[in-house]
Image (cartoon, rainbow, N blue to C red; front, side, top):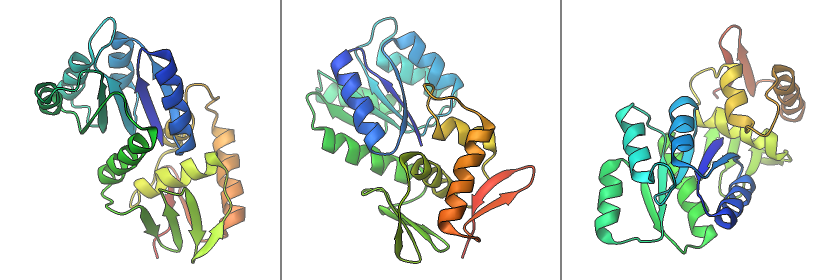
Length: 219
């Protein structure tokens, strides 16, 4: 799962990156509105956290441009002002949720997880496909009810496949959503993660449709 943090206050951006990493996301960060608009318009994110008070181009303008171009990723808006008029304006511009500063990081993470679940058609924190289940609140994986120890990278991969159950996910798309910009996106690295997971989970869990990509096997 891949997130974009758009925040020009360095301390807050650092805390957000750490919290989202801890919640199982690969995280890109920018402090500039123009850069944010370009990234959100050209890269595929599962979630965006967007501050409204930005240099270059304000967050509301960035959001309107994204939505005007058909970009539908979930967006959680942050602002230091937080008046009801501004909340209405942000929601009408296409925000999916709104959180005024200061905020508790635990609440932000809970809202983020709910946004991503809803975007994937899930209402509960426990998600299941076939014999595999993921508890997205605790970031725990189980196979036929038995816990399976996975790394953060392995969890992100399984979470993205779970979010997109019902279709094979091409390797380039998986690379984008499992690895952030700070990591090397190499096909052989992805294949190594898939191989490790298959050893841990056994056959019949992660399938491959040649020429299309990877998917979670249905029951």
